[in-house]
Image (cartoon, rainbow, N blue to C red; front, side, top):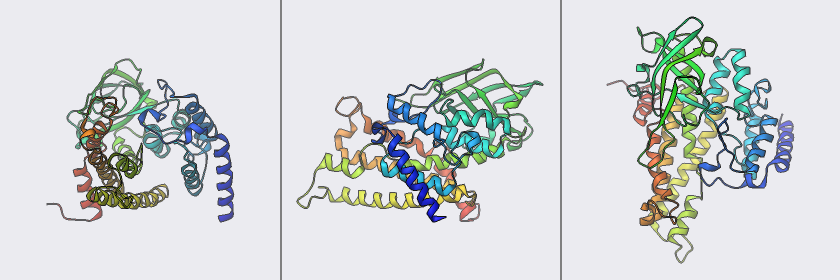
Length: 394
Protein backbone atom coordinates (compact mmCIF):
# COMPACT_ATOMS: atom_id res chain seq x y z
CA UNK A 1 0.00 0.00 0.00
CA UNK A 2 2.77 2.43 0.94
CA UNK A 3 4.71 1.63 -2.25
CA UNK A 4 1.60 2.14 -4.38
CA UNK A 5 0.94 5.50 -2.71
CA UNK A 6 4.51 6.63 -3.28
CA UNK A 7 4.18 5.56 -6.89
CA UNK A 8 1.05 7.67 -7.20
CA UNK A 9 2.88 10.60 -5.57
CA UNK A 10 5.64 10.47 -8.19
CA UNK A 11 3.10 10.15 -10.99
CA UNK A 12 1.05 13.09 -9.68
CA UNK A 13 4.14 15.26 -9.21
CA UNK A 14 5.39 14.55 -12.74
CA UNK A 15 1.97 15.22 -14.25
CA UNK A 16 1.53 18.50 -12.34
CA UNK A 17 4.99 19.71 -13.32
CA UNK A 18 4.22 18.96 -16.97
CA UNK A 19 0.69 20.40 -17.06
CA UNK A 20 0.38 23.26 -14.57
CA UNK A 21 1.16 26.59 -16.32
CA UNK A 22 3.80 28.73 -14.64
CA UNK A 23 1.24 31.50 -14.06
CA UNK A 24 -0.90 29.05 -12.09
CA UNK A 25 1.99 28.36 -9.73
CA UNK A 26 2.01 31.89 -8.33
CA UNK A 27 0.03 32.90 -5.21
CA UNK A 28 -3.46 34.28 -5.73
CA UNK A 29 -3.42 38.03 -5.25
CA UNK A 30 -7.14 38.58 -4.84
CA UNK A 31 -10.55 37.05 -5.47
CA UNK A 32 -10.13 37.96 -9.14
CA UNK A 33 -7.63 35.11 -9.42
CA UNK A 34 -10.21 32.54 -8.30
CA UNK A 35 -11.73 30.43 -11.05
CA UNK A 36 -15.45 30.06 -10.31
CA UNK A 37 -16.54 28.63 -13.65
CA UNK A 38 -20.08 28.86 -14.98
CA UNK A 39 -21.78 30.25 -18.05
CA UNK A 40 -21.12 33.88 -17.09
CA UNK A 41 -17.51 33.49 -15.92
CA UNK A 42 -14.73 35.36 -17.74
CA UNK A 43 -11.30 33.80 -17.42
CA UNK A 44 -8.57 36.11 -16.15
CA UNK A 45 -6.04 34.59 -18.57
CA UNK A 46 -5.48 31.79 -21.05
CA UNK A 47 -3.42 29.99 -18.41
CA UNK A 48 -6.36 29.96 -15.99
CA UNK A 49 -8.60 28.33 -18.59
CA UNK A 50 -5.89 25.88 -19.63
CA UNK A 51 -5.37 24.82 -16.01
CA UNK A 52 -9.09 24.24 -15.48
CA UNK A 53 -9.41 22.29 -18.71
CA UNK A 54 -6.54 19.88 -18.08
CA UNK A 55 -7.50 19.29 -14.46
CA UNK A 56 -11.16 18.72 -15.35
CA UNK A 57 -10.18 16.30 -18.11
CA UNK A 58 -8.12 14.36 -15.56
CA UNK A 59 -10.97 14.49 -13.02
CA UNK A 60 -8.79 16.31 -10.51
CA UNK A 61 -11.06 19.32 -9.94
CA UNK A 62 -12.92 16.82 -7.72
CA UNK A 63 -10.32 14.08 -7.32
CA UNK A 64 -12.23 11.89 -4.86
CA UNK A 65 -15.56 11.91 -6.74
CA UNK A 66 -16.36 8.78 -8.79
CA UNK A 67 -15.16 8.82 -12.42
CA UNK A 68 -18.74 8.30 -13.65
CA UNK A 69 -19.61 11.75 -12.27
CA UNK A 70 -16.58 13.66 -13.59
CA UNK A 71 -14.23 12.95 -10.70
CA UNK A 72 -10.82 11.37 -10.50
CA UNK A 73 -11.90 8.26 -8.63
CA UNK A 74 -9.03 8.66 -6.17
CA UNK A 75 -9.00 7.10 -2.73
CA UNK A 76 -8.95 9.50 0.27
CA UNK A 77 -5.23 8.79 0.70
CA UNK A 78 -4.49 9.52 -2.96
CA UNK A 79 -6.56 12.72 -2.89
CA UNK A 80 -4.57 13.86 0.13
CA UNK A 81 -1.29 13.13 -1.67
CA UNK A 82 -2.47 15.11 -4.70
CA UNK A 83 -3.30 18.07 -2.46
CA UNK A 84 0.15 17.87 -0.87
CA UNK A 85 1.91 17.76 -4.23
CA UNK A 86 -0.12 20.70 -5.54
CA UNK A 87 0.84 22.68 -2.44
CA UNK A 88 4.51 21.71 -2.82
CA UNK A 89 4.56 23.03 -6.40
CA UNK A 90 2.46 26.09 -5.53
CA UNK A 91 -0.35 25.04 -7.89
CA UNK A 92 -3.53 27.05 -7.55
CA UNK A 93 -6.84 25.30 -6.99
CA UNK A 94 -8.17 25.04 -10.57
CA UNK A 95 -11.84 25.52 -9.67
CA UNK A 96 -13.77 26.72 -6.63
CA UNK A 97 -17.53 26.54 -6.41
CA UNK A 98 -20.46 25.95 -4.13
CA UNK A 99 -21.24 23.06 -6.44
CA UNK A 100 -18.03 21.34 -5.39
CA UNK A 101 -17.96 22.26 -1.71
CA UNK A 102 -21.67 22.06 -0.84
CA UNK A 103 -24.11 20.74 -3.41
CA UNK A 104 -21.86 18.00 -4.78
CA UNK A 105 -21.62 16.06 -1.50
CA UNK A 106 -25.40 16.39 -1.01
CA UNK A 107 -26.06 15.08 -4.53
CA UNK A 108 -23.72 12.16 -3.97
CA UNK A 109 -25.56 11.31 -0.75
CA UNK A 110 -29.21 11.99 -1.69
CA UNK A 111 -29.43 12.42 -5.46
CA UNK A 112 -31.00 9.99 -7.89
CA UNK A 113 -28.70 8.44 -10.47
CA UNK A 114 -30.23 10.68 -13.13
CA UNK A 115 -29.58 13.79 -11.00
CA UNK A 116 -25.98 12.77 -10.36
CA UNK A 117 -25.28 12.15 -14.03
CA UNK A 118 -26.97 15.42 -15.01
CA UNK A 119 -25.36 17.79 -12.51
CA UNK A 120 -22.11 16.40 -11.11
CA UNK A 121 -20.06 16.25 -14.36
CA UNK A 122 -21.04 19.86 -15.16
CA UNK A 123 -19.92 20.92 -11.69
CA UNK A 124 -16.63 19.05 -12.09
CA UNK A 125 -15.94 20.71 -15.45
CA UNK A 126 -16.86 24.18 -14.19
CA UNK A 127 -19.71 24.53 -16.66
CA UNK A 128 -22.42 25.48 -14.15
CA UNK A 129 -22.04 27.80 -11.17
CA UNK A 130 -24.40 27.32 -8.24
CA UNK A 131 -25.73 29.58 -5.50
CA UNK A 132 -27.48 28.73 -2.24
CA UNK A 133 -31.07 29.72 -1.45
CA UNK A 134 -31.36 29.27 2.31
CA UNK A 135 -31.72 32.47 4.37
CA UNK A 136 -34.77 34.72 4.14
CA UNK A 137 -35.60 38.13 5.64
CA UNK A 138 -37.43 36.41 8.53
CA UNK A 139 -35.48 33.16 8.56
CA UNK A 140 -31.78 33.56 9.28
CA UNK A 141 -30.46 31.69 12.30
CA UNK A 142 -33.97 30.25 12.67
CA UNK A 143 -33.79 28.84 9.17
CA UNK A 144 -36.67 26.43 9.73
CA UNK A 145 -39.03 29.43 9.77
CA UNK A 146 -38.53 29.95 6.03
CA UNK A 147 -41.65 30.87 4.09
CA UNK A 148 -40.71 30.61 0.39
CA UNK A 149 -43.42 28.30 -0.92
CA UNK A 150 -43.48 25.55 -3.50
CA UNK A 151 -47.02 24.65 -4.52
CA UNK A 152 -47.57 21.21 -6.06
CA UNK A 153 -49.05 21.78 -9.51
CA UNK A 154 -49.05 18.16 -10.67
CA UNK A 155 -46.05 17.91 -12.99
CA UNK A 156 -44.16 20.84 -11.43
CA UNK A 157 -43.83 23.05 -8.35
CA UNK A 158 -44.74 26.74 -8.42
CA UNK A 159 -42.23 28.66 -6.29
CA UNK A 160 -42.94 32.07 -4.73
CA UNK A 161 -40.98 34.01 -2.13
CA UNK A 162 -37.68 35.70 -1.37
CA UNK A 163 -34.19 34.71 -0.29
CA UNK A 164 -31.54 37.03 1.12
CA UNK A 165 -27.74 36.97 1.47
CA UNK A 166 -27.64 34.74 -1.63
CA UNK A 167 -23.91 34.80 -2.40
CA UNK A 168 -23.15 35.46 -6.09
CA UNK A 169 -26.78 34.96 -7.11
CA UNK A 170 -26.33 37.53 -9.88
CA UNK A 171 -23.47 35.46 -11.33
CA UNK A 172 -24.84 31.96 -10.71
CA UNK A 173 -26.45 29.68 -13.29
CA UNK A 174 -28.46 27.42 -10.96
CA UNK A 175 -29.66 27.54 -7.35
CA UNK A 176 -30.18 24.89 -4.69
CA UNK A 177 -33.08 26.17 -2.70
CA UNK A 178 -35.05 25.35 0.45
CA UNK A 179 -38.80 25.80 0.02
CA UNK A 180 -41.88 25.18 2.14
CA UNK A 181 -44.16 22.42 0.89
CA UNK A 182 -46.13 21.94 4.14
CA UNK A 183 -47.19 24.76 6.49
CA UNK A 184 -48.34 22.48 9.32
CA UNK A 185 -44.80 21.79 10.59
CA UNK A 186 -41.46 23.59 10.51
CA UNK A 187 -38.54 21.28 9.68
CA UNK A 188 -40.91 18.56 8.48
CA UNK A 189 -42.50 20.82 5.86
CA UNK A 190 -39.36 21.80 3.93
CA UNK A 191 -38.23 20.46 0.55
CA UNK A 192 -34.99 20.89 -1.42
CA UNK A 193 -35.23 22.06 -5.04
CA UNK A 194 -32.70 22.64 -7.83
CA UNK A 195 -33.50 25.07 -10.65
CA UNK A 196 -32.04 27.32 -13.31
CA UNK A 197 -31.59 30.98 -12.37
CA UNK A 198 -32.71 31.91 -15.90
CA UNK A 199 -36.14 30.42 -15.21
CA UNK A 200 -38.97 32.87 -15.79
CA UNK A 201 -39.85 34.66 -12.54
CA UNK A 202 -36.35 34.64 -10.96
CA UNK A 203 -34.70 38.01 -10.28
CA UNK A 204 -31.81 39.26 -8.14
CA UNK A 205 -30.78 42.53 -6.52
CA UNK A 206 -27.23 43.09 -5.19
CA UNK A 207 -26.78 44.05 -1.53
CA UNK A 208 -24.14 46.68 -0.81
CA UNK A 209 -22.18 46.11 2.42
CA UNK A 210 -20.24 48.47 4.67
CA UNK A 211 -17.05 47.45 2.85
CA UNK A 212 -18.42 49.10 -0.29
CA UNK A 213 -18.81 45.87 -2.23
CA UNK A 214 -20.55 42.58 -1.72
CA UNK A 215 -21.08 39.12 -3.20
CA UNK A 216 -24.54 39.05 -1.62
CA UNK A 217 -27.92 39.48 -3.29
CA UNK A 218 -31.61 39.44 -2.59
CA UNK A 219 -33.27 36.79 -4.75
CA UNK A 220 -36.95 36.87 -5.70
CA UNK A 221 -39.21 34.11 -7.03
CA UNK A 222 -42.46 35.02 -8.74
CA UNK A 223 -44.43 31.97 -9.98
CA UNK A 224 -41.27 30.06 -10.90
CA UNK A 225 -42.05 26.66 -12.46
CA UNK A 226 -39.72 23.90 -11.25
CA UNK A 227 -40.07 20.39 -12.72
CA UNK A 228 -40.71 17.60 -10.22
CA UNK A 229 -37.52 15.76 -11.20
CA UNK A 230 -35.50 18.67 -9.77
CA UNK A 231 -36.54 17.77 -6.22
CA UNK A 232 -33.51 16.48 -4.27
CA UNK A 233 -34.63 13.88 -1.75
CA UNK A 234 -38.27 13.33 -0.87
CA UNK A 235 -41.00 15.95 -0.48
CA UNK A 236 -40.94 17.44 3.04
CA UNK A 237 -37.55 15.78 3.73
CA UNK A 238 -35.44 18.72 2.62
CA UNK A 239 -34.34 19.56 6.14
CA UNK A 240 -32.31 16.35 6.25
CA UNK A 241 -30.53 17.30 3.02
CA UNK A 242 -30.09 20.89 4.26
CA UNK A 243 -28.39 19.81 7.49
CA UNK A 244 -26.03 17.50 5.61
CA UNK A 245 -25.11 20.30 3.23
CA UNK A 246 -24.63 22.78 6.09
CA UNK A 247 -21.95 20.53 7.55
CA UNK A 248 -19.98 20.82 4.31
CA UNK A 249 -20.65 24.56 4.09
CA UNK A 250 -19.26 25.11 7.58
CA UNK A 251 -16.21 23.05 6.69
CA UNK A 252 -15.73 25.27 3.62
CA UNK A 253 -16.09 28.50 5.63
CA UNK A 254 -13.76 27.22 8.36
CA UNK A 255 -11.07 26.94 5.68
CA UNK A 256 -10.86 30.74 5.59
CA UNK A 257 -8.71 30.41 8.69
CA UNK A 258 -6.04 28.61 6.70
CA UNK A 259 -6.46 29.98 3.16
CA UNK A 260 -4.97 33.43 3.31
CA UNK A 261 -4.63 35.34 0.03
CA UNK A 262 -1.86 37.80 -0.60
CA UNK A 263 1.44 38.15 1.29
CA UNK A 264 2.22 36.32 4.50
CA UNK A 265 1.25 38.30 7.58
CA UNK A 266 4.85 38.49 8.81
CA UNK A 267 6.13 39.68 5.41
CA UNK A 268 3.44 42.35 5.23
CA UNK A 269 4.27 43.60 8.74
CA UNK A 270 8.01 43.72 7.99
CA UNK A 271 7.38 45.73 4.83
CA UNK A 272 5.22 48.24 6.72
CA UNK A 273 7.16 48.55 9.99
CA UNK A 274 10.71 47.43 9.31
CA UNK A 275 13.24 45.45 11.35
CA UNK A 276 15.09 46.12 14.59
CA UNK A 277 18.84 45.64 15.11
CA UNK A 278 18.32 41.89 15.44
CA UNK A 279 16.43 41.74 12.14
CA UNK A 280 13.13 41.12 13.91
CA UNK A 281 9.90 43.04 13.41
CA UNK A 282 10.47 46.42 15.01
CA UNK A 283 7.37 46.28 17.21
CA UNK A 284 7.63 43.76 20.06
CA UNK A 285 3.94 43.79 20.95
CA UNK A 286 2.79 43.23 17.38
CA UNK A 287 5.57 40.66 16.91
CA UNK A 288 4.21 38.64 19.83
CA UNK A 289 0.65 38.90 18.55
CA UNK A 290 1.70 37.68 15.10
CA UNK A 291 3.69 34.81 16.62
CA UNK A 292 0.65 33.72 18.62
CA UNK A 293 -1.51 33.91 15.51
CA UNK A 294 0.97 31.79 13.53
CA UNK A 295 0.98 29.11 16.25
CA UNK A 296 -2.82 29.03 16.26
CA UNK A 297 -2.93 28.93 12.45
CA UNK A 298 -0.55 25.96 12.31
CA UNK A 299 -2.54 24.15 14.98
CA UNK A 300 -5.75 24.80 13.08
CA UNK A 301 -4.20 23.55 9.84
CA UNK A 302 -3.20 20.30 11.55
CA UNK A 303 -6.67 19.93 13.04
CA UNK A 304 -8.21 20.63 9.62
CA UNK A 305 -6.23 17.79 8.06
CA UNK A 306 -7.54 15.40 10.69
CA UNK A 307 -11.08 16.75 10.37
CA UNK A 308 -11.16 16.34 6.58
CA UNK A 309 -9.80 12.79 6.84
CA UNK A 310 -12.49 11.85 9.34
CA UNK A 311 -15.18 13.71 7.37
CA UNK A 312 -14.41 11.70 4.23
CA UNK A 313 -14.43 8.52 6.31
CA UNK A 314 -17.82 9.42 7.81
CA UNK A 315 -16.43 9.41 11.34
CA UNK A 316 -16.86 12.99 12.51
CA UNK A 317 -19.13 14.08 15.34
CA UNK A 318 -22.23 15.79 13.86
CA UNK A 319 -21.38 19.01 15.69
CA UNK A 320 -17.70 19.11 14.72
CA UNK A 321 -18.28 21.24 11.60
CA UNK A 322 -19.66 23.92 13.93
CA UNK A 323 -16.46 23.81 15.98
CA UNK A 324 -14.30 24.11 12.86
CA UNK A 325 -16.46 26.87 11.40
CA UNK A 326 -16.32 28.92 14.59
CA UNK A 327 -12.57 28.66 15.09
CA UNK A 328 -11.71 29.14 11.42
CA UNK A 329 -13.76 32.30 11.06
CA UNK A 330 -12.38 33.77 14.28
CA UNK A 331 -8.86 32.99 13.05
CA UNK A 332 -9.54 34.75 9.76
CA UNK A 333 -10.87 37.79 11.62
CA UNK A 334 -7.74 37.82 13.80
CA UNK A 335 -5.52 37.78 10.72
CA UNK A 336 -7.19 40.85 9.26
CA UNK A 337 -7.09 42.65 12.61
CA UNK A 338 -3.32 42.12 12.58
CA UNK A 339 -3.04 43.30 8.98
CA UNK A 340 -4.83 46.50 9.98
CA UNK A 341 -2.57 46.92 13.02
CA UNK A 342 0.56 46.43 10.89
CA UNK A 343 -0.68 48.90 8.30
CA UNK A 344 -1.25 51.65 10.84
CA UNK A 345 -3.05 54.76 9.68
CA UNK A 346 -2.35 53.87 6.04
CA UNK A 347 -4.57 50.81 6.41
CA UNK A 348 -7.52 53.05 7.26
CA UNK A 349 -7.31 54.81 3.90
CA UNK A 350 -10.29 54.04 1.68
CA UNK A 351 -9.89 55.18 -1.91
CA UNK A 352 -6.34 55.90 -3.06
CA UNK A 353 -4.29 53.95 -5.58
CA UNK A 354 -1.59 53.57 -2.92
CA UNK A 355 -3.92 51.47 -0.75
CA UNK A 356 -5.38 49.56 -3.67
CA UNK A 357 -8.70 51.29 -3.18
CA UNK A 358 -8.72 50.58 0.55
CA UNK A 359 -8.06 46.87 0.06
CA UNK A 360 -6.97 46.18 3.65
CA UNK A 361 -9.83 48.09 5.27
CA UNK A 362 -12.49 46.65 2.98
CA UNK A 363 -11.21 43.09 3.50
CA UNK A 364 -11.15 43.64 7.27
CA UNK A 365 -14.75 44.84 7.25
CA UNK A 366 -15.78 41.88 5.08
CA UNK A 367 -14.46 39.40 7.67
CA UNK A 368 -17.10 40.58 10.13
CA UNK A 369 -19.64 38.66 8.04
CA UNK A 370 -17.67 35.43 8.58
CA UNK A 371 -19.19 35.10 12.04
CA UNK A 372 -22.71 35.46 10.59
CA UNK A 373 -22.75 33.51 7.30
CA UNK A 374 -23.27 29.77 7.45
CA UNK A 375 -24.75 30.10 10.95
CA UNK A 376 -23.77 32.80 13.47
CA UNK A 377 -20.94 32.23 15.93
CA UNK A 378 -23.50 32.32 18.75
CA UNK A 379 -25.44 29.48 17.13
CA UNK A 380 -22.25 27.47 16.59
CA UNK A 381 -21.25 27.92 20.23
CA UNK A 382 -24.70 26.78 21.35
CA UNK A 383 -24.37 23.66 19.18
CA UNK A 384 -20.89 22.95 20.58
CA UNK A 385 -22.09 23.42 24.15
CA UNK A 386 -25.09 21.17 23.68
CA UNK A 387 -23.79 18.44 21.37
CA UNK A 388 -20.07 18.19 22.23
CA UNK A 389 -19.71 19.49 25.80
CA UNK A 390 -23.19 18.18 26.69
CA UNK A 391 -23.89 21.19 28.89
CA UNK A 392 -27.44 21.57 30.25
CA UNK A 393 -29.74 24.04 28.55
CA UNK A 394 -30.54 26.99 30.70
